[in-house]
Image (cartoon, rainbow, N blue to C red; front, side, top):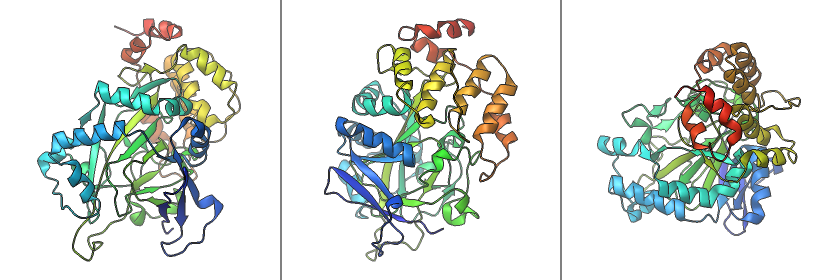
Length: 407
């Protein structure tokens, strides 16, 4: 299946990302259109709708606070000035990613200032998409990838920093990570420069197809049976945009090659980083932040307004982690809401319930791995005290679960 190219129109408050069958073919179909949406309160419904439909939404007109902070942090640890970062995307600065630079950039640490800025800028969107209690990733990594790069990795952080410059195979965020979290989290992908190349492949709609792979796949061009993952579209980054996508959305690096260079010999470099936000996650050993007062009350009110299992899933998870009852509706096949049933089994140490929930979440028809591989992996999940300690005051309903955990 040939990837389609994503282009962004810049002349409207809500900008269409036009997806063509080829760069020289202007014909469009309605189902080929994603929306790049200005991040403002009046557009929240449109942002949520796009996320529900495609599993990905591109935001424009975003407050520059997080972007400026991330750019400055990159400059501090790499020596790259903002001017060089910008020039690299157009192929006007041949940045050499040394082994030392890779080590420095492979594990960025979240700061209180950056977290506060992210919550201020993205808070309303996060609450609508994953609920009122949020974990913010404590680490992140920068990516500095040349258009001509040919090295491919099928793993995340490994200690050598190779993933900073190498291309990624196809994956979803849940099973590609070493640490088990939740299928309902989201990635906030931040381009730090305009890049004249196809940086990422996304597979819109794959977030509703359940678990397709327990780990990593080859890149799109190298994957036999790529149509099993779904239709693919390319994305060309633009500084100032933010890409939000669901943890189950399949994606990977774009398709540069060693001969794909500008005639003048320059080699564009795309520079980015990605942050992750999680709904309350009792197996994630980090503190959570309540972005709304009375989070459980907020959840119950919100559940009365929702019908889509994709948005209900993180709310169910929070209730399950708090040991609170859930009135289960019928769930569609491969729903991420089955993860909350996995959590219910986890709290009472019932592996059969955990296994049954995982079986409902795994897509064995289109997927690449057997159900048992997921079940064996996920049985290792264990509750942590830290997330419960962090919400002790705002969520007293979770006190019985906290009391059951060893100090």
